[in-house]
Image (cartoon, rainbow, N blue to C red; front, side, top):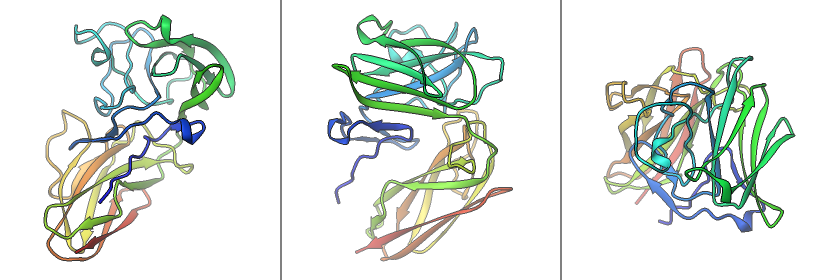
Length: 268
């Protein structure tokens, strides 16, 4: 079975035929793209670095500000959050990693300046931005043409659960697995970055949950009992086929949230 790569939420190649994404890196905590063109992360100016949902396997999805843990060089020492929900009077640091020669940062369609990869510090491009709600977008350019973009949006109140399986079919061999990313989103489908709701996972059909992760190192448990909290509004459930073919339904419920259901087929 061929597993097609899927770009992370917020990332888009422009146009599709110039996408530089290559393959997928699958792990227990996250299914992530091994190399994507561009990504951004945000921290409040003047604060210590804060750990995001996960230490990403992506080429570029880290950031941070101020003093903090770690003394190693390179991307691994920087932390940030994929969030555009901050206090109204905040000034935030936006950091971007990219494979493009230059990046233009926009806030609500207003350009905030162009940074060039040749001038990056430890491979990071940086802006200091007064926060305002809306849409933050980084556009990677090559030879003056847009090649890719990464977008963060301000989220409203949590409203529903969203499920994103990486496969719609399983081999009914007792070994094959499917990763189901779960997110808590607002009415417009934007992930709510501070959502920590406890979620219950119910599986019917020839499959079982072998683990649920959320990236929170301070959160005990494995999720094998079908209960896990979201962290930064998301997490990952790992579903394993049994030896029988048939339809598998995964239902996820949380207090005050519209439930989500996804169907996966186990085939001989």
